[in-house]
Structure formats: structure tokens, C-alpha cells
Image 1 (spheres, rainbow, N blue to C red):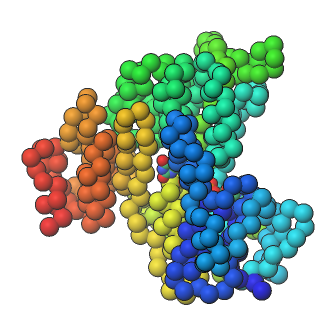
Image 2 (image 1 turned 90 degrees about the horizontal axis):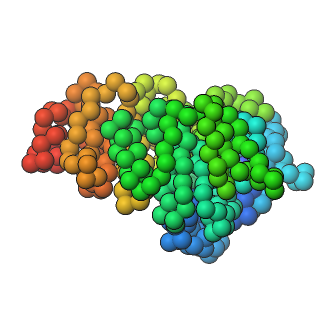
Image 3 (image 1 turned 90 degrees about the vertical axis):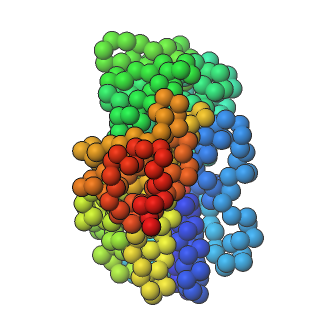
Length: 409
Ligand code: FAD
């Protein structure tokens, strides 16, 4: 019988299945995914797993018994290839057809390939899946020198882990700053200093022209547009992701680098929803709440999936959570609440040099975003300040004796 069919067995898919049951959906739930491993945590792939502090088994999100208890059929190594919206069924690789009442696209995103000659040479790794992380871990056991391409979160976390393991690491970033798209200059400078102190060689405003193979056919050097050549034993590419929205596109659903949905995860097809990294949705905490955003985070995947599950349960509750995110590099934990813009007023609280601070971003007098480094309590307060859209005085925020909590009273 047709029930709830979810394509993609990761955060969004798992949360969807879980929340649909919790909200009272009693029909059959089928969760299909094309990976071999049961749903697992992705953030540790570039953190604890690469550092040898976590094992693949330890990343499992739910024990096998959970699926039986909740009557969720989990089918792994199964790939959905087409959606027939009229007949309401999905065709799998191999030809099997699955009918649905409700269909959820939770297909996530994939690593953007490096678009240069040699970009896919052996020895050049992307990092999205458990298999990718295990391949990088194996490489790091023998490689001495690794070049990381992309100074975003994935690239920098990988650089941090590999450097901690004693490898020589170069980071090549096309922009003028690390994390340029996502953090203000103070935070970016902080992480640049941190990596440099740890012995990572940073190359900003550096454009990769090609990867060059050695005699064995494996990558042996990164060639930059300014003529420089960085010798290496391997390359890790972290230059962003592409939303897996091809299934939706082929089914005629509106997409714009991500499946376009409303704040409840609804596509224009009344029986099809989407959530997670593959979805683009209007965010009440975005600069323009009407402008749909694609947020690549566990928080956004979980919260939009819960909103979509509420539609299936018959009591729609739109997404309204404050976005938050984190990144661990060496001993520094960065936590971000809210969404900032380059024009926001920036107010520093704490000691930037010592790596214990929060940077508050104000827009029209309101706290809209806070970047905290090793300030977990302030991060939690920041989420509340942003959620309650409080007005705050810059001088007060900067004063270490001023109690942030008082703003919530
Ligand atoms: P995904 O996790 O991408 O899962 C989608 C699943 O669908 C995949 O298993 C995919 O193979 C499968 N799939 C795709 N197409 C099909 C198909 N046609 N048929 C069947 N299956 C299909 N976020 C944070 O908030 N904090 C962090 O610190 C953080 N660190 C990260 C570190 C790494 C190395 C990576 C890769 C990501 C990190 N993220 C982090 C991002 C976070 O993991 C993603 O936002 C989250 O995984 C999104 O979940 P999702 O379910 O939407 O998609």
C-alpha cells in the first residue's frame, strides 16, 4: 500500500520519518537511501573520525531496533531514478516501482567537483560521505603532504585534522579570506591566525589552474594561476556542494539550485515535500524573509523536516527556528547563531586574541547573528536574543560586566 516514501536516508529523511510517527502518522513509512551505511552523523567525518577519536560504528544515528519499533522500512543501497507524479510512484534503479501517498525528497547535496584539468585524478578526494572520509583517513596514514583546496568549513576542518595528525598541509582559497562567504572578517582572521600558528600554509586569493599527475598517474602537484606549484601527495577538495535536485527537476518541480519549497517544505505538488540540503525555503531569519535560502546544516535539515512532517500529519506548522551551525578546528569551537550580512554592525565581546569571544552582528539595532568562539553559553543565549528580535546597545554588548540575560527579561 502507498504510504510515506522518503528518498534520502540521512538527517532530513530520518527526522521526517521520526517526526511523522511522533505526530501521529500511522501509514507505512519507507526510507530509501543509496549509501551502504545506515543513517550516520556527517559532521564528525571532518572532525572526530579523521582525528581517530570516533569510529564509523559510533556515528550511527539510530540502532537497528528503532526502525522496527517505529515501523519504518529502511532500504539501503537503493537509488530512486524517476518520479511519476500522475501515477504517484517512484522508479528505482533496476526498474522496481514504489507507489506513494506522500513523497519526500531528502536527497541532500554532493561535493562540487573541481572544474580544472586533472581535477578528478586519483589522489584527489572530496568529502561528503563516510566512504569519502574513510578514503581520506587511509590516505593520511601514508601521505606526508596534503593540499586542501577550498578554505570553507570542510576544507579547514580537514586541514585541522590532518595537521593535528602531523601531516604538512597547504590550504588554497580562491577568495581573499578564509570562510569568506559565511563569517565576518574578524572571525575569518582569527581562523587564519590559528591555522598559521599550527603550521598550515595558507594561500588566499589563489586560483587553482590544474592538478598535475606524477609518474604513477596520481596527483603530485597543484598548479596555481599565478604560476606557483604546490607539490603534494594528495589533494582534498572542499569547494562547496551541489544540491541533489535532479529528480525534482526531471519531474517538473520548480528548482533553483535546490528544490523550491514553502516554509512547510511543500512543493507545488500537494503530495511532494522536500527538506534538508536539497531544499530552498523562505527563512524568517533571512535578510529578506521572502527570499528562499538553502542552508547546509543539521539544524535546518531537522527543523524543515519537522515542518514537512507536520503537513503529513495534517497540522501544518511552518519552519520558524533560528538557524545555527558549528565548526571545530583544533581547540576552537565556533558556533554561529542567526544569519549575518556584510553591512551589519559588528560588536566584539570577549578576547579575540585568546580565542574566547562572541562577535555580535546588529541590523537596525537588533541582534541578528552571533559568532562565538569557545563561548558555548553565549551561543545559547544568542539564539534566544535573535529569536526574540531584541534591541541591544552596542556598548552594553561589548561590556563584559553587562549580563546578556537581562536583555531577555
Ligand atoms: P545528506 O546528509 O546529504 O543526505 C542525503 C542522502 O540522500 C545521502 O545519503 C545521499 O546519498 C542520498 N541520496 C541522494 N540522491 C538519492 C537518490 N536518488 N536515491 C536514493 N538516495 C539518494 N552541518 C552542521 O550543522 N554542522 C557541522 O559541523 C557540519 N559538518 C559537516 C561536515 C562534513 C564533512 C559534511 C559533509 C557536512 C557537514 N555538515 C555540518 C552539513 C550536514 O551534514 C548537512 O547539512 C546534512 O547532512 C544535510 O542532511 P540531508 O539529509 O539534507 O542530506
